[in-house]
Image (cartoon, rainbow, N blue to C red):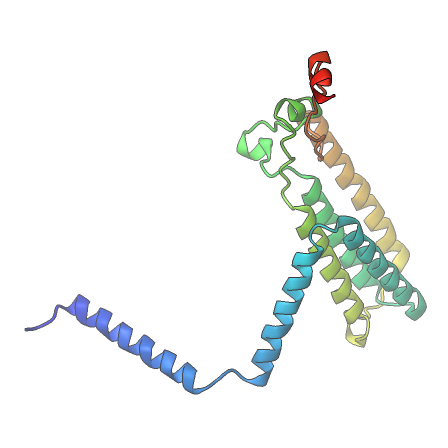
Length: 208
């Protein structure tokens, strides 16, 4: 019997996929691919392990920032890279402070004031950028910037005091706008925690 064109096309795709799988089986991954896979696996394991250790992760980030600052200070250059890094970190910080649902664009109320958080049994503040993603992106940016200081092509001549003044002005204006946004919509970028009940005298007697 004659097969329909749709069935024929489906069978052809299955045959092609099978041939491609056989070809991949005949050619095992190269040493570079195996190394990349092992490296990615190790990095992911380390990130998973470090997730609950918030203070330790930010201590490592502080060390990376100090190391980068010393590097730029001693080589006396690559200020444009430092300026770009500062802008990127500031942008991530604003994302960390911003709510996941913006009431101005989404038309939603943010039930994350301290009183509302207690009424909602400590519902966590929904961030646009989570703490772990904020840390991971910032640490990666510092490492990339540190690596870029070893290449002369990125050492663009610039009068660094001007960049510093630009960054200070941008930081002040951005934080001022963010604080006005918090006051206008009555939210705070943290969670007060769940409300605890100690119970009355009867509960105290039962505990004894």
